[in-house]
Amino acid sequence: MDTRCPRCGSETVELGEKSLEIGVTRKDPVSIRLCGNCGMVFYVHIEKISKF
Ligand SMILES: [Zn+2]
Image 1: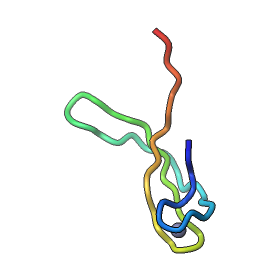
Image 2: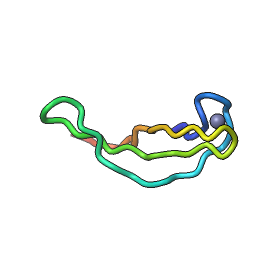
Image 3: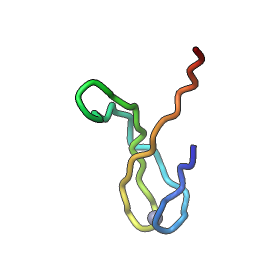
């Protein structure tokens, strides 16, 4: 999981997690990140390992 800022490439801090609704039935967990350098707030998709 790449948690660096997509704008400036700096390290970011996590503000929290939430489930982002994608469509009607799908919810994806995301990490809310804040860049300490440029102040950008963005979501990072949390990749859960699932085996079937
Ligand atoms: Zn940044």
